[in-house]
Image 1 (cartoon, rainbow, N blue to C red):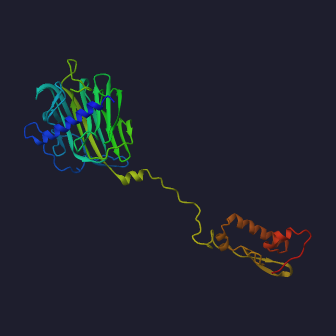
Image 2 (image 1 turned 90 degrees about the vertical axis):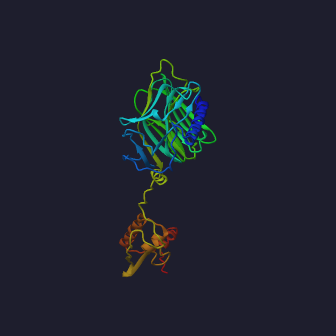
Image 3 (image 1 turned 135 degrees about the vertical axis):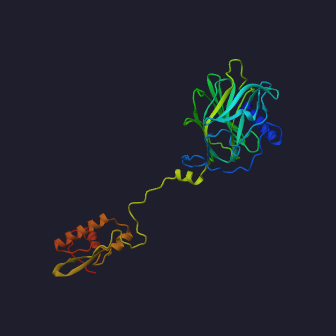
Length: 370
């Protein structure tokens, strides 16, 4: 992948810059990092399913919120690289503006800015609306930076816009990295970028369109950062055609934590309840108590009929209890009732248990009584 070598160098250099800046007392330096903690969002935003809003940054003030962000404070790149300076990170007009300009500092011909969020987490959704500058030799990028300072689990979205524009995507997951390069027009206006990092999937989206999707995911704490740089094999350096100063502008940022319970609920399908209730014990009627039927036989004798009577004189009784236990349907009960009525009307009672054997004996008219 064309970004692998440069991304690794950039990450190692940035890690060294952060460590060196934190240990240094000279300006510009990275301020001491306070304990990372969730910050209540200044502006409420609707969280997508499976995510919980941790904070939102609207950059409405006149300076960087130092309780939430720290700036880079060292150099990067070759002899044509940049010196990252605190004064190149600007806030105004509702935007964060990271500036690159031609200015000699610390042996580098250019100065630029970078910053990292003071909150790190394992898994998250990161959304930001940004506009990258156009021009040769400018790399505007967002990163998810591992707390351990290494590059094995780093995420990068690098936008180069010399014309045509290209986006170089890197997903480091510890044992390797995946990525993709996408071409298009990314410096024309503000666009919304999303990094979605969950236990089973890693994605990068551009204005809602999936640019990169990977099931190999990092599992270490990382923090969101932004920077502008130059002076490596991928980016090159600005030349006389590059309009400077240039600004990487960020309108807003939203950071979400992964909500396991909500994610599980969003992917669970509830089965409908069955429309027919099965008996909870043998002998329980399906549709209420079935009344017994009385038939009038020869000589006016009466016989009480019950379903399932098995060979007795009462073999055709409609006992709902035993019908339910045997699993017969209400439709079968109706057929038995119809048959019983037909027998009564004929005036001759024959137990159902005997009817089949009697039909098999041609010419037999004998009627048994148990």
